[in-house]
Length: 154
Image (cartoon, rainbow, N blue to C red; front, side, top):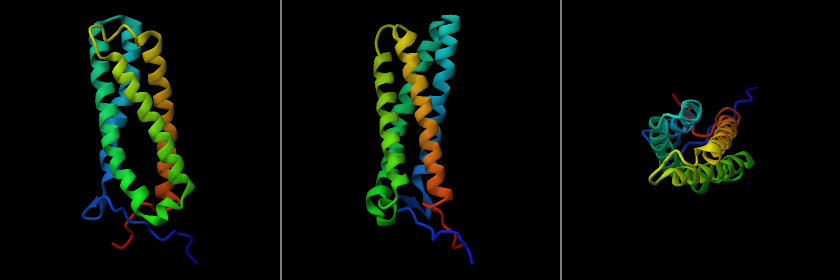
């Protein structure tokens, strides 16, 4: 007897490949990279790292909201996904994370992008990175425990 769950196919997909996991990599990489640019700016004071952080924060926030639309389609359009508490927890954590990431990016826009990195920008960056880890854990549970977006027909 197999304990493998029946797969839950994505409605936001191209040729059976779900869009959300395809789109999320760049925003996550940018927001995790922001930890490094903030650390470099705080430790070295070079304004280059503050300017790089503006771009990392913007790519992370805007790209994350874009990727979240594909996840939202599955959350709202697939009844089996809607019934999963893990899906709602993943969505809630992602919205909180993207809200913090957006605030962090907006704080950096302006004449002196490094002015608010110490301490608020850096703190927002670390909290955002923590939320990314939690959202990733919950997303992994959706895939590996509930087979969301997994096509086992091939």
